[in-house]
Length: 182
Image (cartoon, rainbow, N blue to C red; front, side, top):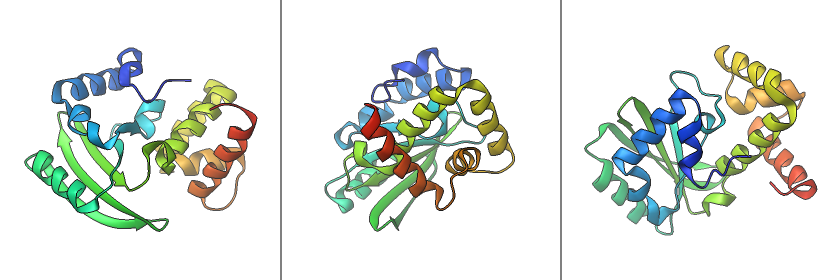
């Protein structure tokens, strides 16, 4: 399993992962977010990305307004910069989107430690499932994504899991966590 808390694994990944590593290093983006414990999550770290997949970076904040203002101050001049606020599963969330090099970035902040956020847990369980089920399974996930499925939906479809795919994968995470150290 990759060590997702450190982006070094991107250096030896797919061409797109290597490009992302170079963009992150050149821009210093993760250093700029360091105070908010950033972790790159989503489909790119898993090698399940499509050409239009964005780069998801989760962050943890103590003060919502301070985080929001920081994002505007630091990234507000980036191409396509926009912020939004919402409640995701009853958790206040600040989202900033912008473009850097050839990537669309989505900075996703909540008042939850990053390693306790759904995006991180999804990353770990999806990585575990990919390692467990092998390359054919991974190829099938990619095919479903090309057909319009979101990543979590594709996993649940192939695994025969019904219900809300985001919650279902968290339940899978909790089950596997008790069996293995992921």
